[in-house]
Each structure stands twice: as structure tokens, then as C-alpha cells.
Image (tube, rainbow, N blue to C red; front, side):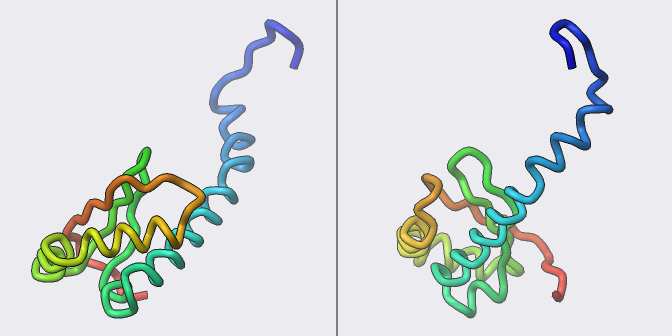
Length: 104
């Protein structure tokens, strides 16, 4: 593309997604693995990562009692473990949301 030549966003989007896609998938896989180790097998089985925006990791949990237990009693411990398990990015906070999980 020559200087000053314009392209439509729709024409550029496939190139951008192709370049960014695998990196995001790899990061999600690595985060999921780290989450499993940090949260422990029982919590990891009943939760999943749904987002990582800026420095906040968002985790969906399958029930209100589990969410309450984690937030009231285990959040500092899990956050510290998550930071140790995934040092590539700064994790300032973990937010838990209630969401039905699919059986996968």
C-alpha cells in the first residue's frame, strides 16, 4: 500500500484477526492452565475465565454459594497464586460473575 492510499476497514480486518488471533488463543490457554493451578481442581472445575481486561481477570462461577465462598474467604489467596502462576501480565484484581457453565 502506497503512502496516502486508503483501504476499507473491512478489507484490513481479516489480516488483523489473522495476526492477533493465535496470540489471544495462546494467552487464553495459558491463563486457563494457570487458573486451574491457582484455584485448585474443585474451583477450576466449577468456573472458567471469561475475560481479561486491562489488569482485571473475570471469572464465571456456576453458583452463588461458590462465588460468595471465593470472594469472602479465598480471593486473596487465589489472586496471589494467579499472579505467581501467570507472571507475564499484571493481574491487579479478580472479578467473579455468576454464569451458567456449559458442560465441556
